[in-house]
Amino acid sequence: MTHVDACLSQCIGLEERSQALLLKGSIAQTINRHPEAKACFEEVAQAFPGPGPYTALSSALIACGEFQRAAVVARAGLALLPEQDSPFEVGLTNILGDALRFDHKYEEAAIAYRHVISLMPQHGSAHHHLGFILHFQDQIDRAIEHYEQAIKFDPAFLGSRSNLAYALLTEGQFKEAWPHFEHRWASMVSPSGQQTASQPALPLRRWGGSSSKCQDQHLLVLAEQGFGDTIQFCRYLPMVLEQFAEVGFICPKPLQRLVVHSLGTHWPNLVLLDDVPKDFWNWDQYIPLMSMPMAFETDLKTIPAKTPYLSSEPRAAQSFAFRLEKLERSTLPRIGLVWAGGHAGLGVDQWRSIRPEQLAPLIEWPHACWFSLQQPESEDKRLRPDQHDSVIDWMDEVKDFADTAALIACLDLVISVDTSVAHLAAAMGKPVWLLNRFGGCWRWLRNREDRPWYPTMRIFTQKERGNWDEVFERVLDNLKCSDFRRDASV
Image (cartoon, rainbow, N blue to C red; front, side, top):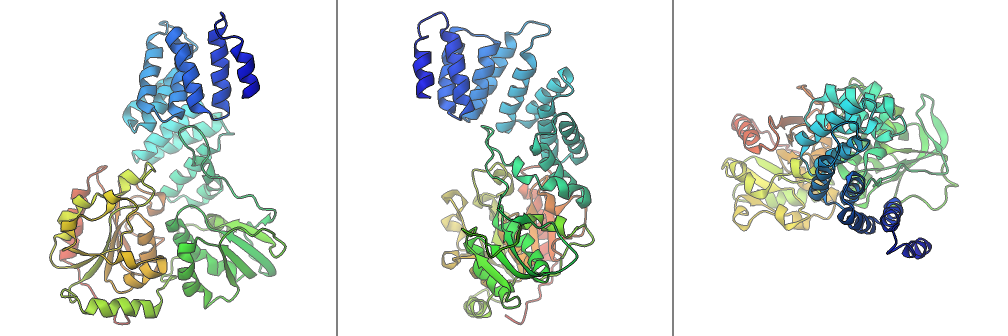
């Protein structure tokens, strides 16, 4: 911005100062220099308070992560509007909704978005974000209606198609959802509006599925999103391994040893890669891993749900089993426990994770031998020192998912929040009790007793957001009447 700064500096001190600062701030905002934009708009708003400067400033504050102050500024701008027909009312109210939404004040944000829609029924962004809030509140049917309205009025905004996919998947409407699910990257955006992940673009033909075999073809499969997603959808790998001469799976390193052991011995045409190859002469087509369900036209009845499709290395599992036999409580049911997810910065983590101090009702149940399967990413997710007497923790010895699988193989049950270890244990065919947040992930569906993706999983869902105590009561009631039968092969 050197040239722009030089030009604008000539205006400083002149009558055009405010316009110059607004222009400079707008340019800074466009090229993602948000603190600089905020400084420009703050100066203008202090000198010339009004709806226009407050609109610009509140938008910049959101981009800088200052959500509470953005809401204050937006409300101040609204208070300065004339009583009727202000062109700023829609914009300021929508920005207010955004600030409240990012600050997790969803009820207030919904009121703002509804007011925007009352003023401008064709406002696609307001429909989209109101749909998001309704989705969060587990009002899936109403969320779908607003996502569809958002697509109608703003078809170029792919985030609405992505969120519609998640809502439809939650309802089990797979056929309708998968085409929209191809826009899933569009919903990964930061408060500043920047997309945090992008759809892979390789110089290869995208494989879209085929009933005919491609015996002379080589396919690249790209893992995506989290470890749990990769574990869930790698069940499709044998299906493409049957069709292609060779399948290269770009797999996260912590999962590679597990995948090689589980699939590599049966499928010599599987090649694991650390990253996208630098050249593509050996590959004919590619597909992102989570596009496999659409390629194979998966619906609720055709999910490839036979388990186990992942397994532990026998020698590693036997090593843990030998140590377990020496424990004083080794004859009690062996229950693995995961209480927190990863990515503490993500909004969903605060809802799916349980604080260690909240575990007391569960780990104080004396009729089990409790094992930590938790890999804490921060100190606030570690067990307190006084909890170590109740929970055995060997996770410092665990280096990857193959090690975790070896320990899981020795357990009778895994109780876990919605995280990758729950996927791993269920993919191994172990009994899993999922501690599911209110309005949880799409893959667990709604209002169903069966679990189509994982037959050995039971789901204990919060009846109200944040209330884990009631969930623990139900878990303990079920533990008391459970008959644990140990796998004699370990």
